[in-house]
Amino acid sequence: MATNNLSGIKHIISKILKRKDFANMVIDLQTYQITPTTSIYQAPGKFPLLCLPIQHFRGLSHIGCSCATNSDHPFIKTLIAYGKGQCKAYKNSPLEKYYENFQPKTAAETLGVSDSTYKLSTLTALQSIEPWNPSIGAKMNPESREKSRMKCDDHESLHKKKIDQSLPYQGFKFWGPLTTLKGQVEFERLVSVYESIQKHGYTPKDNYNGHIAGSLLTNEKGEYAIIIRTGQHRIAALSALGYRAVPAIIKSDSKRPIVINRKDVNNWPYVVNGYFSKNQALEIFDRIMKGLPPYLKNR
Image 1 (cartoon, rainbow, N blue to C red):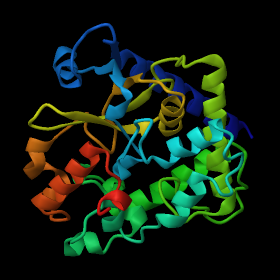
Image 2: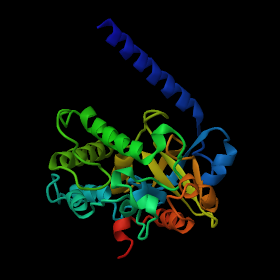
Image 3: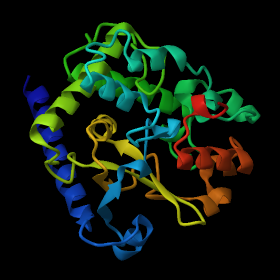
């Protein structure tokens, strides 16, 4: 018992230190009229916090849904329907229809790549990687990504006390298929965030876990998008509630660099190691930049 208590204390201390270190990395530049790319140069070694137009955000990882209010993002469509009284539960909601209609079996299908390389064709949907993901390290390979996604998604559900730990895997929230129970959990999480912001406004608690955060995608034309890493439910709620601009932190993490520049395609790790051709990698980048999810690509 004493060993377990000591382990728990160490875990809490580690989280506190991590929170403090991250908070010190963030620099608030919301009052400055600068572009996201310029903010990176203005704050070397820091993670800039900027207020950005909501249409520049991309949700559901490399699915790349635009977060504009009129977009096809299933989370946003669901909350708009909820706000209008058109759906009160997961059943028959836009969210349920999304999970029923978009059920990719391969990594190529999640990425919207029509003609995949041999290496990419061997990967399942849960093993999907982005061309710019790091490839060095035991936890960076596709097999580890699959285990991480399953563990992380179930952990989120378990944390909310909604899904019993003894139950089998319920599905991944970025695409289908998933169980009705898991779908209901996602629906309730969305509604909870939506109602909280509607009632209390959007006031992030702190720089560690309060703000939406993601990596910056930019191209040679100066266009940009923020591919969200944390805050999928928050950005959907804000968009559904009509927010036109949202504060967000541009940051790196273990899976993405802080900036993903189109001109660097030949240096992206999974292009270098042959999982993607240059053209395929650019196809994915351009699709996400446009906010065009794979299931709408050919419509």
